[in-house]
Amino acid sequence: DAMVIQNPRYQVTQFGKPVTLSCSQTLNHNVMYWYQQKSSQAPKLLFHYYDKDFNNEADTPDNFQSRRPNTSFCFLDIRSPGLGDAAMYLCATSRVIRDDEKLFFGSGTQLSVL
Amino acid sequence: KQEVTQIPAALSVPEGENLVLNCSFTDSAIYNLQWFRQDPGKGLTSLLLIQSSQREQTSGRLNASLDKSSGRSTLYIAASQPGDSATYLCAVKKGQNFVFGPGTRLSVLP
Image (cartoon, rainbow over all chains, first blue to last red; front, side):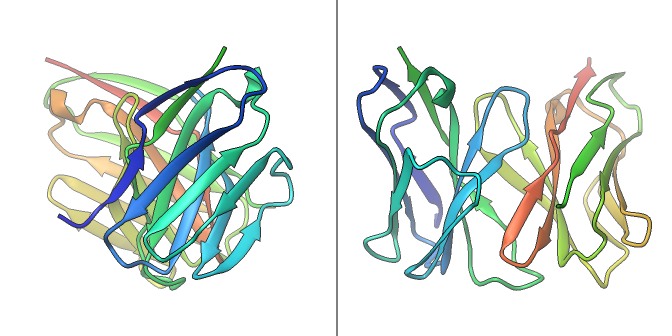
């Protein structure tokens, strides 16, 4: 089945040690999003790619970077994770930016920072 | 800035009850509104999408309505089942962005 796949499912890193989360999609969607969700809170958009065009949210910390080497893959890099970055990171896709387009999510990566 | 709230934050009902979840948003100039389901520790699954020109959408036991002028949407779940237990989030779309509410945590007791 076509889907959005995130790896790993769980990631443990040390304070200050760079970490990369990955997302792949077989939907051939144009847009890929990264959301951060802390416990019992709303998912918060970090950034998104429309094809190769990168769009950063104004309040996304500089500590967070992203790469999209091709249509199928997108990576979230956290350069120096702090304890406050422990969260669920959700990757999502949509086909094009249109009114009737749904958002499709992966299963998420739960990040712990020790 | 768009803000989305959901009431109640948590809800516990006996199996078989009909229930309503509420979503409110501050900026009525939206493109669409989606309702999602999230199981503990998992990603989000889209349930229903209502375009800005529509008033409601139905899927099985679920019915979602949208009143853009008042900034409100409701998700109606008929004949609730224990398998419906999850967190339900609404999200509004404007431009390229989706803004989420914090969700309503639903427990359906057998």
